Length: 225
Image (cartoon, rainbow, N blue to C red; front, side, top):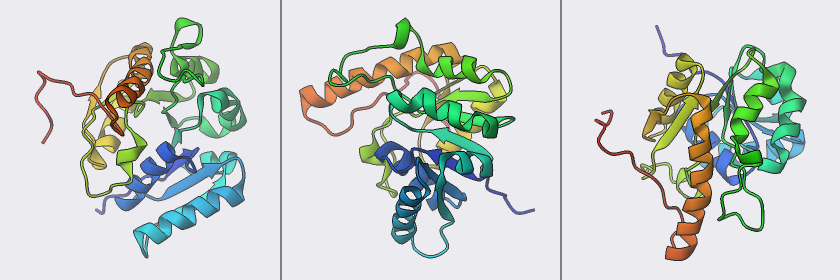
């Protein structure tokens, strides 16, 4: 029986991080929907990805609510300031699905300083907002967009995957490994606060040492083949 790829919608797929993830999954044969506030902007980004990947790439652009409705798995890759409003806009379309939240609580201009909302996890707040009908998974916060568009390269940064639903976490771990990322199930969703805070630390390292994309590695655990 052929391997059936799930359709992945990336809300915020017109941005660098979301666009990089969308490009990698499309490159591996997943049907991908680029989501944006307007269908026109989404389709423009999707057309660019189709051009990059060549013929046969299944990449479409839609407004965020339509993209979420048409997908099996939804990725939220919008700026922190738009996180809550985007979730509210697409909430009905997320019922029964996995939502992978990539959001990092960066507060410009001091993005290299950890500024967690009310001292807690931004992703965990999304799970509370959506309730048990949506399985929210935290992942990909520490991956630099600089690396994602280099499709032939492995990314030298591990992915911490956090979720209260273990099966959903393992599905996201598998999706990350598909696109040549090393991913780990890092426990319940409340642990996401570590990955969210780490992003500001990595930005500080990038600036201090003048590198485009520092990352983290988990050691002492056997790595998957």
